[in-house]
Length: 333
Image 1 (cartoon, rainbow, N blue to C red):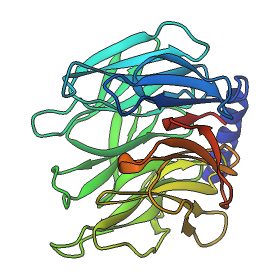
Image 2: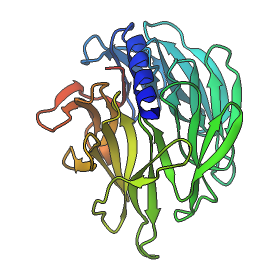
Image 3: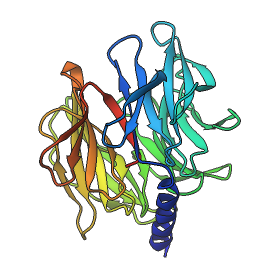
Image 4: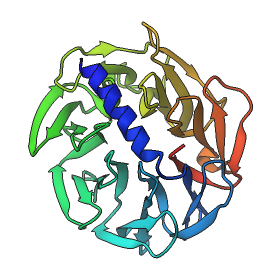
């Protein structure tokens, strides 16, 4: 019943989002001190700059683009910007000391989830920012290791580690209506999907090897924890991190991470057993997946290689270049 309800809510959210044209946002000049936010049609045509900033996130309804502008040198401060997707001046929603990371929009395009700013230890709080009022609500403090809004409503799942050590265990929490409950231990990088929450769970391979992470699923109430993947992971790599779901929850985009490593992987959840495979040969950064799960948005150019923002079929095949020098894309396709 919960899975059916989640699917219905996802379909309603999709219908609402379709009222705005499909759009693409990305960062231009990302390797310079002055990156800019670019908006375009979903196929990359009609591109034009909105203004300064980077790491843009399109709202689910396609009406606005959130971005971060670094103020000063050495990430002295971060300012959260909200651009109208149709163009015009950005609203400045708040300035924070240090680096702020945008984690996602609520399904109704009213709230932004962000982590930071960092404190002296490198840990930072998890915040929700009301876009209309600019009001900021602190959800959690400590070493935040990923967070995500529910597909409908304003509930949040997040992971918090005990310290910043690579091997420090993290636990999973759900925040709802001002209350927080723990739902899992040894869990990080959660993503709340239409059918369940997916997260990474690792185990130690010894002091000279990185912890090995596999993907697991769990119900929002903490029941039904189930391992999804069992892939081989290199000695200096950590494994898969969930990135984005299709609207039906059957297609999952993931990032295979490790030391100086980022690869685009897909996880097919349509059958009784999850099927994970590398989509793009070599280094890349997975950005987004289309609502119907048939297309994936990928940034090429990891670790200094030439930049390119490309669309690739879910099953692999010929890539379509959407922005020859773009990076860090966000879609409402």
